[in-house]
Image 1 (cartoon, rainbow, N blue to C red):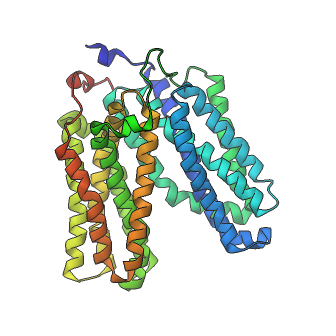
Image 2 (cartoon, rainbow, N blue to C red):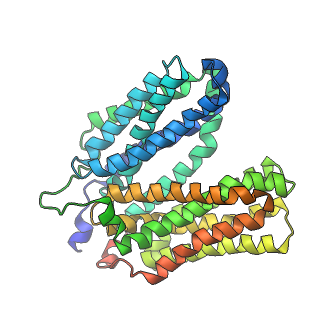
Image 3 (tube, one colour):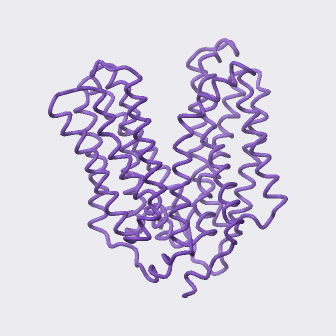
Length: 411
């Protein structure tokens, strides 16, 4: 066995507990929008303001997250990941609790800006921490599992948020996330060796966002991941309007499409580790990329036929979700590996690229939304097709020692 496989810093039980702690932190950050979402329509009455000002509760969080991604990606070069992870969760907890005492919308919006910035810390730091716990195969499985858990948040958190708003008021979602984050911090404080301590090594070459972005191998994995996920999100963000306004469907058709799509993503993401173990990392990344493109092409071909039945989307959209699930974890891990230890900047770039592509794609589709499924699918194909070009045109990461990495029992 090579040193490549001996570097297991945590025993299995401790690694699983650490993984669950890390994922809990990222889920809290994601829930920062979805738990609050049901309360936003009531905030004009609560705070005596306009609906436009109330919507800034969401916009401020997103803006803060954007700044936080870049900030934590840089800070990780100077401070250990474990310290930053705890600090970001503690800051998120305190700001969340403070937000529950806001008496006007502008105070709440200012706190939401800070809350979003603090929440991005766990998103940026989580992949690097997970890589410090497991072998490459283990990291693929863990990050795939994290993605499948996070995929449930947009569906479940609004339901929980609506119940809490009705039962306890708008403050409850802020109090809940604040208290839960403090509990996570307490767990790490009680078990200080739970999370891997990975800081910048003395003598490491200074890095920067430009250095990561200019690495073609990173673009092969990271940008292709962002293109596929961004394309999928573009479809999801635009689908309700297309279904209702141009396909004579209802929101139930969208919910069914999403339920099947998310279920297929979760299933394929959790099987991805077994696929990697059998066929290798590069084969799975390539297969998942082609399958994602196939999914978008199937939707485009269906649009060309003009049948326009919204119930058919449930039988087509799952292919794109499955492709992303298969390649998502493996591609993300390889993107981090290609950054040569600058995991946090790499994570920040991938997340920002994903949200930027989704926002741009949605904006491009918006003026043509009444053109129906055709305009939407053409846009999504145009977004995802370059991911295949990146996979084909750029040399993959060296698979040195891959066979040892993928030995059974090492994940």
